[in-house]
Length: 478
Ligand code: NBP
Image: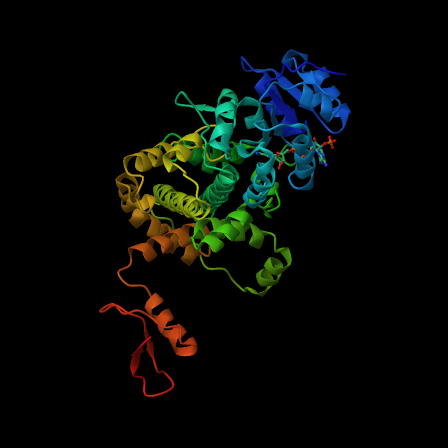
């Protein structure tokens, strides 16, 4: 079937994400959406189920390309990896200079950089777009993080703005930076999401174990927290989940779920890249590791068998619930500070002009980490884009200082009670590391110089030095 070039946007890949995104696009005024899927039956299903969308369906990729008005703009929503490459090649063969190929899947940003480099000589724009919000977001309004060229964004920007979530009247989309910047920032978003979820999990565990509360009571606490500074999608759904009762057993749902957390890899990518960039993202790393530990069923069973008795659970302070809220908030601030540090480092390494205030803004709606306090992050980076850490911004400095004593009480109580809080405690250690007058890094430098002649610098004069450890221990300048 030949089609006339009537669509301003096309979607390739009509599984759950692609079909929802296509329906979202079609529902916005001014869009006419062409659709294509490798297996035509999937396209036919979509047409049958959603005649209201007025899709222009193409069975072949040739017809799909022909159905797009210039500059042709197509969003690929297929399985990340080989599937994406196959569709990119099909489109690149048919598209012309100025046309735009968008990858809206969960690509690794390094792949996006490589693909952009490969496509660039053809004059076709290749744009990696991070899309957050899952199936529901794709349909009703996701948070959208596009990379690619400025020129492509002139065409793509208004289309993406038409389908993005809206927060405080503004669409949750911004041009993040060139080539892989969008997928990089989406990766960091997911890393922060891991940290946020782990911290919420630790707060729940403490309320149950030390606070001796039933899931429905913990749900009430989370619902109340959701009325204050902790207000966020994740806190909101946590209350919902904790209230849910398993229909089969009548037990709280949370008690019948196997306590082994899965993952799809973006947390791991975040940590791997942070290691390469030399950015300490302990909060995110601990969250990734906590999921890994949870899955070590045999090791957990072996240690459980060996441990004769667990520490006695401490009596909770009268302020325990508020203390946990303060610890959660302070730890969450640390996790976001670390995530934004990773964005700063990535932008520097890959030469992206990333505006962190805008990133916080587009995460306010549509995505999993949407939260009230992102407004504070936007304010912090708008007031002073040059702050070295979020913790330097007056609001966050005050928030951490206000919660500090409670945070320490909670971490101490957890340690004495044998409740694992890798997120809370690593966040506190990170804070203490930044705040310490002196760090034992001086001793580490001494060790490095002792066994490897790696040299050190002194506090009292410039230069690089080495001590002749194996000889008379005189110091030489190197
Ligand atoms: P899937 O990741 O399950 O992929 C299925 C789609 O890929 C189908 O349309 C399939 O066509 C197509 N496909 C494959 Br597989 N290999 C292909 C090939 N060689 N050539 C052409 N098409 C091919 O779909 P999804 O769950 O809708 O996810 C789409 C993208 O969105 C993925 O990158 C995923 O990681 C990402 N995602 C994002 C979020 C989020 O929250 N942002 C959530 C879930 C997924 P067929 O019908 O012919 O088999």
